[in-house]
Image (cartoon, rainbow, N blue to C red; front, side, top):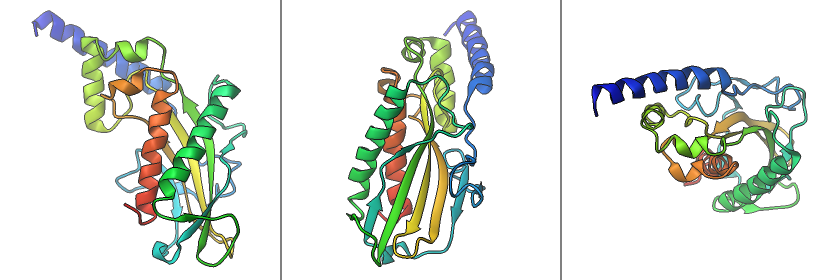
Length: 222
């Protein structure tokens, strides 16, 4: 790499950092969630993806069944969908329902009525950003953009012009209705994942995949 090319890449990377820092969506304990008052800032190592969490000591192995409620699209004033269309929100909610059902079925028997040994889970889609058309993919072929994405990948952060998804998880004991676990999660693909840069909702869908896998692990799956 010549000195001129290197300097250009550094300048582009710095500008990208400033741009994305101003434009990034910061999740919050959304005010109209039933668990909002329980959520507190997560200080654990996964805080970048799960910034807010509530949990009580619980032996998850005592639960073998799970009721998965239909995914809710959050309508509160603090929603973070920007100008995303209702059609895109609905598409993500449908994908989330299907993905979480499939992943959770590897750990639980999916049920339809409350009983001892069953959990009830509510997923609320609270925000999402689309991958910027053309630019999202183009950064993977530009020296400056690729450098920025490489740094972001090492930091576990989002790609330049890439999309993301934000949602809340609320888990109750189905028989007693006691809140056992809640969190606010933001997920996005690895910044060097070129495949997720094509298609406005591809990054958000990949984020849903990652989030479902992570939740299964939290609940004692593999």
